[in-house]
Image (cartoon, rainbow, N blue to C red; front, top):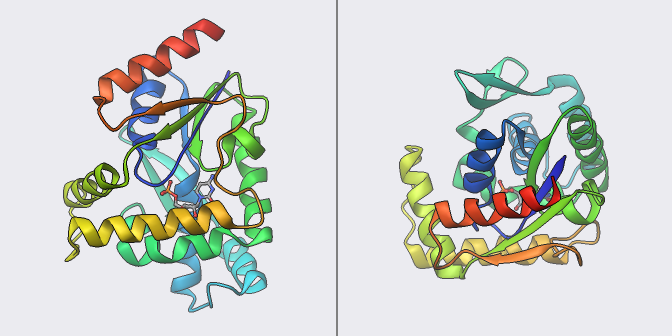
Length: 221
Ligand code: C5P
C-alpha cells in the first residue's frame, strides 16, 4: 500500500508519518530530506544553488544514502552523516531553489518511486499525491495556521539542538517565503491532489491526526 502525505512546511507531516508508519510496520520515506541532502551537497561543493549540471554531477559523485541506525532514519552524503546538517536554517533557506531544478526533481522522483515500489510505504513531501505516487491508495494533505507551524518549527529546532536566533515571527516569514516558492515553481508545485483528504492540524493533537490517518488507511486496506 502507498500512503502519500503532502502539505506546506512544518504542518506536522513527518511527525505523524513516522508514528503512523511505525504502528503499521510500513516504511517511512521523507522526501524533503532528499532535497535537503542535495542542497547540502551543493553547499559543500561550493556550487551555485541554480547550477543544475554541477549539482547533478556532485550528487552522483557523492551519493545520497538513507540508513536506519538504531531505529532512526539517518541521511548520508557519501560517508558523512548529514542528518542534522540538513535541518539547519541555512539549508532550509536554500532548499526551494535546489528542489525547483528539473534535473534534481527527475532524479529524486525516480529514486522515490523505486523505494515505494518495494514495500508498503508512507511518503511525505509536496508532490507525492500529485506526481510521485498518483495512484497512492490514501492521499492526505496536511495544513495548519502559519503561526502554529512557526511555533512547531522553533520547537523542532530546539529539540534537535539546532541553534536559531530567530523569533517566531521571523520563522513564520521564512516558512511563508518557502511555501510561496514551493507553490509557485513550474514543476510539481506544492498542491493538494484532487483526491486527497485535507486535514487542518492547527487545533489537533498528534494522536488525533495519527488516528484520523489510520482510520483512512484501514478503510482502504
Ligand atoms: O519537508 P521539508 O520541509 O523537509 O522539505 C524541504 C524542501 O524540499 C521543501 O521546502 C521543498 O522545497 C522540497 N521538497 C519538494 N518536494 C518534495 C519534498 C520536499 O520540492 N516532495
